Image 1: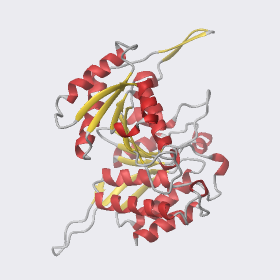
Image 2 (image 1 turned 60 degrees about the horizontal axis):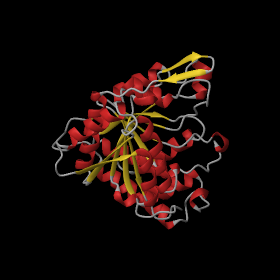
Image 3 (image 1 turned 180 degrees about the horizontal axis):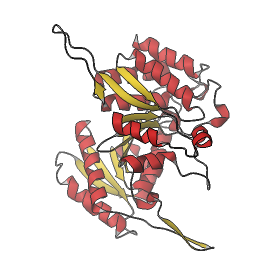
Image 4 (image 1 turned 90 degrees about the vertical axis):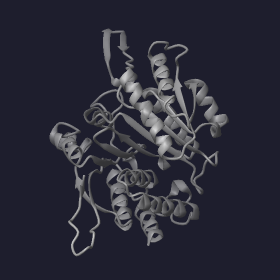
Length: 347
């Protein structure tokens, strides 16, 4: 949602964007503080609607995702969320999954681009993973058949396959990309992945200026390690997309520098894809890069492309300089000091 004053005496007032901010738990509040500091210096006017979700809310409200959080995102249409702890094997289901489902955030966007100064085995990586978010095995349709047998059902539909394929091709076209690769296991999953691949091939025909190919997921993982430069935009079903996007994050130095977005027809949610780091919460040591770059994606989504570019360049410059980065990047600065260094570059 945007709010703007009417022009007065020929002067156009700047647009104020209303954005839902979910700090999350663990290190999330520290990341949110860094983001607010940097975006305030970017010149973009943002009115934050702050809402809590996660473990602390669960203890108070009996649910990790109160209705008012979803209501706020439906109203603002844009949100950014810090990491939220998800119990393994028991407890509540992922808040991330619940938000994607409630808001039909069908496209997960995970760019992976090398940054000078980030320790990595690779250089020059520039990939984008587009992951279908709503079905496949991650739909969570599971049954206990007997005490010793559990079943999970894989769902693939033409409608979901077509809209994620179009999202990937539209993204490639809008961002000057050259090729889209469909990720699948259609040699074995002949009906489900076969449908995804067939529909993606059909969609590719509407984008003749873009190259298109496909790759079986296990071979893709090998090729990403051996020859990542052969890929550009990858479009994948839910489970493969989750795995491949983390692999691509590893190519650029890990999830601490990998931004993420979940986008639907009516709303968009931006987030760092790493964990909540409860063991280092409150210590001013968490690396804010992934969250700040998720803020860059959010600015682009809001149409603030010039500011998005400046924030990205400022983050990249601070990391390349190496003096005011967090310990995981070889520096001695804290989270707040890192954010202030980015602000100084924006000034």
